Length: 204
Image (cartoon, rainbow, N blue to C red; front, side, top):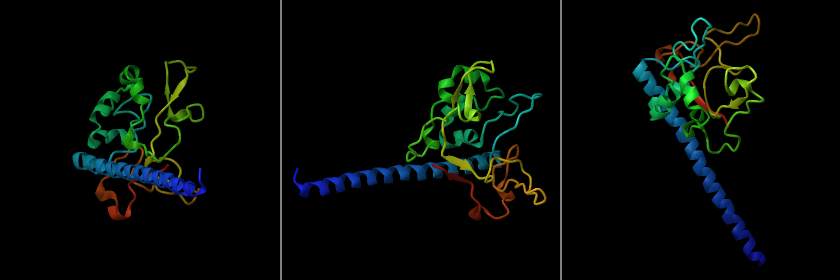
């Protein structure tokens, strides 16, 4: 091949790759926009943003849509009603839906996945069993990793916390965002103003 032809072809491939990545980034940004719209549509309908997730007690298992996160709760407001229904998010006990539709629980949801992320589509249940579905009822049953999402609700730099303030005396930090464990926040509760408060963001 003549040397003079190598660089133009290489430049052409680079241009194609850049164009494809630009398209992927556009999809990532659009996902975040749709999540924002879904959250505000949820607030319009329910008069509050969804809680981060609901903590259950042994006395009331699966009460009030146990352990469903804000992302699942806004699905109907993002034109994902079928996904919402298949997963059984509106039920008080998701166990029947899990038993009947485990494949649906393991299916990545494109609206919550940035196509620029080239990592695995599922969490590694062996490394982090907290992101897993338990198969069967025995403690020795194998786990299957849940789908990865690139979009996070704003709460804390560590992990989702309750609606409690920081405590300088012992060095702990309280929740500082919009999504709290067991508490739904209204727009009027955001004292810094919505234009100055991060609602959700992307992590690749």
